[in-house]
Image (cartoon, rainbow, N blue to C red; front, side, top):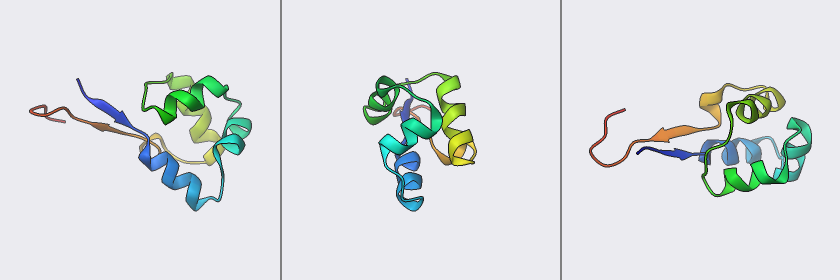
Length: 73
């Protein structure tokens, strides 16, 4: 099964000089969602859309799918 990486999100936050708390507040997210993102766990599409709206970006700017060994994209 493919893994989800939110490394792009963390880099974007650095570029925007925004921390996780400010993102949580701007996007209206719970602590639980931010914790899941930090652990590379899946979160709802609704949460991802809220993040994109808060950061004024596209979903491909905040996450990517990492294929498993032997798995094509």
